[in-house]
Length: 229
Image 1: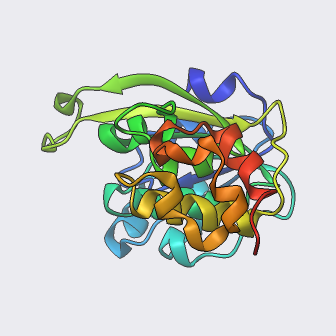
Image 2: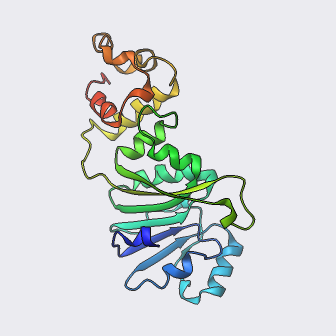
Image 3: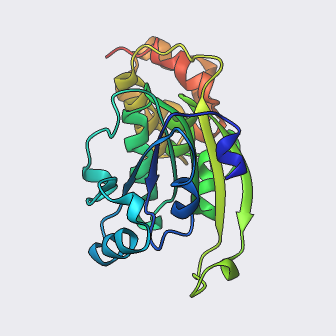
């Protein structure tokens, strides 16, 4: 809660409220327009019976299927379902112009990927594309013993805030295509991995002797302006 409230908000979406461990506190926040998205019918019924004030505030769908929940800027919080956590982050990227903050618990390995700097073994597509639009922060880890029953994976909470320094890119489409193709063959020299995206003269630059994981987010952004298509 403390990590969430450091950045004021008026609209809040909770993802995967489950049994309401966090929801019961969120519902008490004054002056907030609150919504929760929950797919499981039994959990929806439990929440409505246990917390009457949540009536009418639950979106009974998968997070991946919902439309943007607010027309104005909003904050997202949740214990994100681990099996779709990467897809959730890509949906957040679709809404990035209106997302003012995300505080979420992820499987530890996913959290590490999101915040990983270039040169780190966890650095990849998710790292670059999230960091292109958000400043990322690894807040803390959560013991598996905090859950009943304890999961087989470790968890960590991260925070995303819109980048203070906006990244100059040719277009989102160019950035997504370049990053995905570059990491699709991450062990190859960049020259070989992305040769279809640049003309021959550009590919002779020493820069293309590197591998994808050696390039910073800013490097990828700069490269979008050199793409031939």
